[in-house]
Each structure stands twice: as C-alpha cells, then as structure tokens.
Image 1 (tube, rainbow, N blue to C red):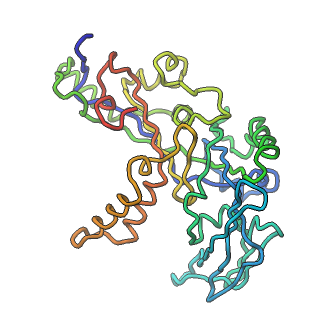
Image 2: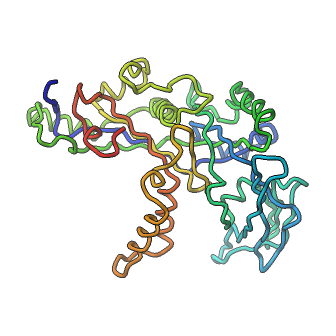
Length: 371
C-alpha cells in the first residue's frame, strides 16, 4: 500500500441548500393545479419528494374557540383497525395587522366529516382553508415523531427550459400513481404528501483539513490559482438541480427510485454526466442539505432513519446544549436557541467525497463525518 498523496493544501466542495419546502397533497394537484395562487406557491421549486406517514387528522368534534385561538385534538391513526390516539393542539394567530398586533380567529369548523382540514375566519374576515398537514406545521402540539415523513421517491422538475412546475410534472407521474395505488391496498391508514424544494442556493467550501502531515504536491503558484478558481467557480442552475436530485437519492435510497442510487460510488460516478462539471472544476466533494423544520416533520428512510442532530445527540444532550447556550453572558435568547435546535433537529446533510482515499486525499476523507 502506497503513501497517501495530497495534491493541494486546500480542497473545494460544493454545498447545495434549499429554503424550507412547500408541502401539498396529491389531491391538490387536480383541485388547484391551474389556480394562479397555487402555482405561484410552487414557483421556483425544482426538486420534489414523495413522502408518507401514518395519517394524522383532526377530531371534527373537538374544535373550540377561546380568546381568538383555536383549540382541538389531532387523531394520530395506528397500524390496526380502530387504533388511534389523540393529541391536543392550539392554533394561534397566523397574521399580524399593520399595527403589528396579531389577528385572532373568530370562527373555525372542520372542512369535512373526516378531519382532513379546517375552515377558519380571522378578525378581519379573511377565510382560510388549512389541511391537517399544514395545521401540524403551524399549531402547538406534542405529536413528536408521529409527524415523521418517510421518503419514498425523489425527482426533479427542471424541464427543458428550466421553468417546469412540480404540479405539472406530478399530474402525469406514473410513479406517484403507483405509490398511491400501493397505498390504497397496502397502507390505507397512511397519507401521501408531496414536498417541493428550491435548490437555487449554493456556496463553495474550502478546507485544509485531512492528513495535514502530508505535504501537498502543488507549488505555491498552483495552490494560489486553485484557491482563486475554486472560490469563484460557479455551476449553472440545471447542474445544481440534477446534482441535488442525485445526492438525495443516493443519501435516502428511496424504495421507488431506481436511477442514481449509487451514482457517487467509484464504479458508477462517471455514469452521471452532471458530475463532470464538478470534477472538471477540481472539486472533491458534494454536500446537499434538506431541512424540513418549517413543516414540523423530520424526514427518514430505511437507509437514513435519523437526521443530522438525531444521529449523534440524544434528547438529554440536546437539553444540555440548550442549557449551556442560555447561560448568562452568551447573549442568546431562548427563541433563538430553540429555533437553532429545531433547525438542526430537522436537517439531513448528504455528503459525498468525489474521490476515493487511494486516488486522492481530500478534506472529507479526514473528517469524522466522512461517508
């Protein structure tokens, strides 16, 4: 076995990330697919996830109004007939007036007899239709991990000209139809939900971690040129979308995805044409983040059952982090700390080294979170 070789002192990685995803139900594709406000909500989303979880509905008989807030109970369905448990929830104001004061509710009722949604009216007379999945994201409750979403399929909606909406792609999606058909027969107690991510954001990461005892073979001039090129390197939107899709498929390995399940392994990575742009730019890593804190639901799959924080921090450790962060002198408020913990608890980070250690030493190979 030969000694490791380090080409540059600093290596470059591409980090792709998205804002919180848009969540919608399969039925809304056909009910609201042509509605301008629904299409506007999905504008810019370019990677979608088809997910499922055990159904959570609203107890239609539990809705009450108190002081402008809405009180009720969620029904978390079990795996057997007539198996469920109830969890209380509170929904406070969702809007604020021009004076900054919250606008409370004046009326609320179930939208149907099965508790799939609520119809509400606020103090300014504005009507809102809130599906139970959206209510979970907005209300206060203690559902905990019952809200977790299993990732069944990952796809992209870039289209020929980069402007195709996920609603148009999914309206004719045979895999979605198969998932819904399988669910009706095999898991009628589950609900299928769709998430639209917008992978338009990226940043280049430079790091000198790894085997620092190995001297780089590049000259100082080559090193400087590499640093300048890596820091300024850009990748077009289509490449970023395709890389995000491939990375999330490789990471979650959803049961309904067939392509790209091992695109980053040594034998298959050359088959993914989009990777050539990274390799040509001399990048050695791809890092793709998926965060669902805005939905109040964590993603999981059989391959990746836990997210970034859940993977290495117990609930006791998380509480220890909170206590330490709120000690006098930190200058952090409880709201800021809680939001940081929530963000990290709902985050998944797909990390891929684009070279094998035997081919080239990289900063990913030398760090404890290398995969």
